[in-house]
Length: 202
Image 1: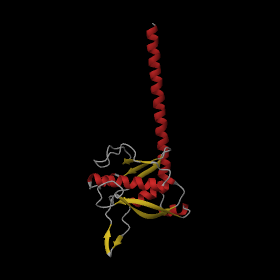
Image 2 (image 1 turned 90 degrees about the vertical axis):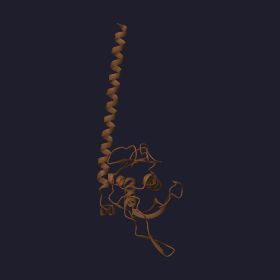
Image 3 (image 1 turned 135 degrees about the horizontal axis):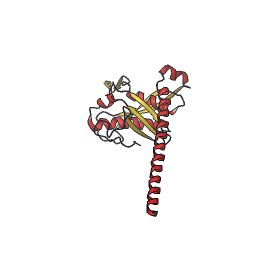
Image 4 (image 1 turned 180 degrees about the vertical axis):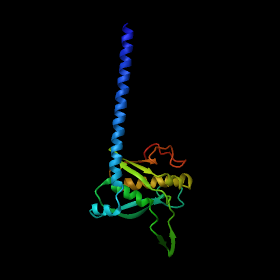
């Protein structure tokens, strides 16, 4: 009889533990959805609205892939200066930075009298679906499928996409400590078949 009572108590504790775990899971899921909906409204702002909300201009440093580089060392990326709207909102700043990275090359570069156009790192059809910032400093960057489909350079090009976004966000937005990537709102094992994105990038 005593053993039977202990079995019943143990089963009851298991049921309670499962119930509490499910409650915590649902609560966190609902909280994240609320964050996403709130941020989504901000991310849909037009440039004119951003300008109205801004207090001026903010200079940022983007890190873009240096064509021909194959080693992800210090010469893998090079700096490019841009100007975005200063809104005082780290999420809006982060979004503008990613949008700048996704945008067309800023025209033609000149060097030694010869002109050359920077190769695109990102597909022209790709876009940023979502970006939000978690309390622990993780920036979640949700990219469209077109960006993944546009990666044609194998592992080097995948690293270029990841490193370009990660370093540009971390260098310009102090609140960003790490970057986690999604594609079409879902977690994936790799970005485009080569580089794992199961863990955040520092």
